[in-house]
Amino acid sequence: MNQKNQNIQIKSARQRQDPKAGCCRVESVVTVDNRGQMVLPKEIREKLKLGAGDKLALVTWQKGEEVCCISLIPVDSLSDMVKGMLGPVIKEIF
Image 1: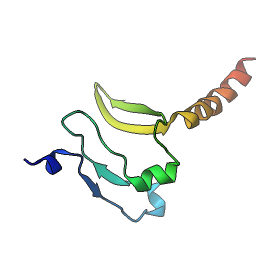
Image 2 (image 1 turned 30 degrees about the vertical axis):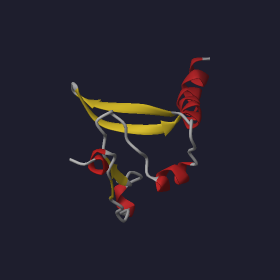
Image 3 (image 1 turned 90 degrees about the horizontal axis):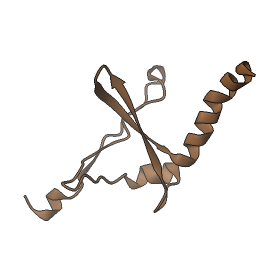
Image 4 (image 1 turned 120 degrees about the horizontal axis):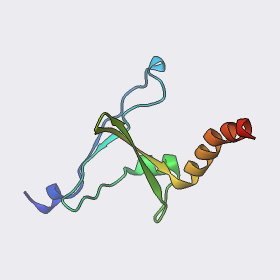
């Protein structure tokens, strides 16, 4: 396998979003290289306004003992999401 093939290969998998399908869709398919690294496609980075050095939280969902899904969330957005979820709970407690 040549060096080019060993590097991250990105296959675009754009699909039309079915309005009944909800908010999730396949934006792209990325490959993990032999060092465990992957590249987020430029279009995704631009949509999220991500730049070099920005941090992403890796969130996993488990089904039984197995991780079935992962999601990458910009850390700046994560704190707002947590506040949004915990805010109503904290108000009920106090």
